[in-house]
Length: 393
Ligand SMILES: NC(=O)c1ccc[n+]([C@@H]2O[C@H](COP(=O)([O-])OP(=O)(O)OC[C@H]3O[C@@H](n4cnc5c(N)ncnc54)[C@H](O)[C@@H]3O)[C@@H](O)[C@H]2O)c1
Ligand SMILES: [Zn+2]
Picture 1 (cartoon, rainbow, N blue to C red):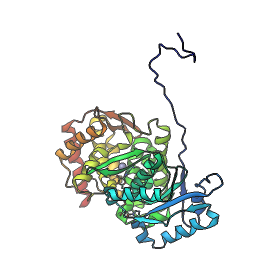
Picture 2 (picture 1 turned 90 degrees about the horizontal axis):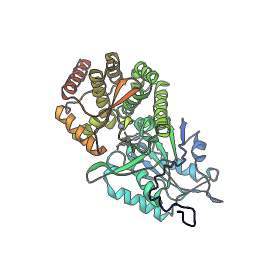
Picture 3 (picture 1 turned 90 degrees about the vertical axis):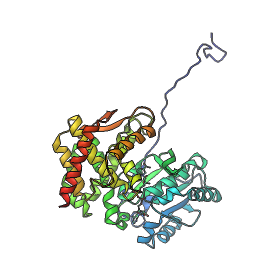
C-alpha cells in the first residue's frame, strides 16, 4: 500500500549511503609571502561582487624569526590587487602546545570572528606550526559550522603530515585533542622559505612522519629516505623538498582516495608508530617533540613487525639506520614495558571497541593486528635500545 506520494507505508527503515564531493587544494611555493604571493591570493574566491573577507593569524615563533612578516602580509593583502578585504590587523598567537591548552585563545578567536562578521564565505588564513593550525582550525570549524580555512604550515612536521589532514583539536580536561572536529581545510600552502626559521631540532622532527608514511605506502620512497637521511638532517636541498613533497602527497592520496578520511573505521593506518608515541610525549611532559616520539614508536613497531609478522630484518635495520641518519632519537630513557602497555590500553580506549594496531608485513603492506605479544615486544624494545646505545658510541 502506498501513500499519495508513492511511498510504501511498509518501509520503516532507510539506510542510505551518501558521499559529499569535496576539493582538497594543496599548493607548493618557494616564497608565498614574496614572489609567489599570487598563489595565495588565487585561493580567495570573491563573494558575489565583494572581495573575500579575511583574517590572518600567525605563529609568534615564526615572527621572532622574521620580524617583518606580519607587516609584509598586511601590506600585500591590503593592496587592491590582492582582491581581499583584510578585516582586522594580522594577529600573533603563541606557538607550541601552550596554545592548545588555553581556552581563552579559542574564545578570543571566536570573538574576533564575530566582531568582524566573518561568515561561511569568509576566510581565516593561519600561518604556523601544527599547534596553531589545530587551534585556529578548530575555532574556524565551529564558527557558523565552518569558515573557510587556509593553512600555511611552517614546520616540517605540519608540511609533511598534519597540514593536509582533516582534523583539528584543542586540549580539554587536561587531555590531548579531546575537543575537536573533522573539517577539510579550504586550502593548504606548503612554503619552502618559511621553514628556514626552524631550529635544526624542529626541522628534523617532520621526517619521522615521512619515514612512517613511506613504510606504509611506498618502497621507493623508503629507499629514497634511506639514502637521503644525512643530507636531510643537514637541511640539504633538493632532498628536503623532495621528502616533504612525497610525504604530504602520500598523506593527501590517503585522505582523498583511501576511503576513510574521517576515521570512521576501526583501523587508523596513518597512526603507525603512534600508539606508544602519544604515551611517550605525555610521560615526558612534552620534553620529546611529537616527531621525536614518533621516530621511537616507528623504530619499536618496525622491529616488532620483523619479530612477529615476517617483515624482513633488513627493513627493520634500514629503518633504524634511516631514523638515526636523520638525527632523530630511536630510544628514550622514559620508555619501558609498563609505559608501552599502558599506552596500548589508552590507545584502545581512545579508539573505542577492539584494539587495532597497524603494523607491517612488508614495506607498503600494512596489516592490522588486535593484540601485542609481551615477550616479542620486550625483545623489540631491547633490540632498539641496543642499537640506540651503539649509535652513540
Ligand atoms: N591535526 C592533526 O592531524 C595533527 C597531526 C599531527 C600533529 N598535530 C599537532 O601538531 C602539534 C605539533 O605541531 P608542530 O610539530 O608543527 O610544532 P608546533 O606547532 O608545536 O611548533 C613548534 C615550535 O616551532 C615554532 N615555529 C613554528 N614554525 C616556525 C618557523 N617556521 N620558524 C621558527 N619557529 C617556528 C612554534 O612557535 C613553536 O614554538 C601538536 O599539538 C600535535 O598534536 C595535529
Ligand atoms: Zn604524527
